[in-house]
Image (cartoon, rainbow, N blue to C red; front, side, top):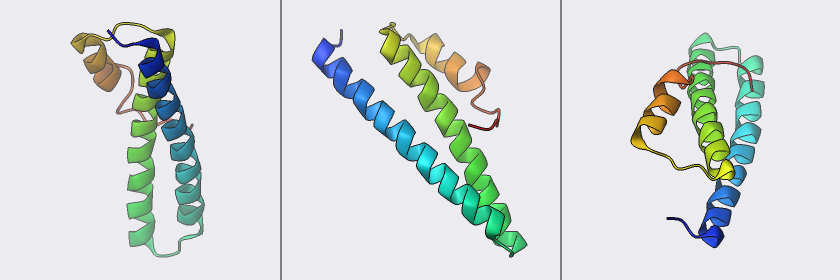
Length: 91
């Protein structure tokens, strides 16, 4: 069982990570939009897609932890595979 003080640290850390990820993602999107080299642009777009998947995973994890739910292995797999870890949607 996680102590409330430890849970608060985890929540804070996840929130910080999510906020930083959004800022970084926006910066990479800006660079990709301005990039003229198609090869570099393709790499940047792949990074954007990958970061969007990471963002979705961390958002799900953050929501579960904030609600204080018990996470079981099945929940983790559902979060990774069923709930859109491979779906790219705009954040």
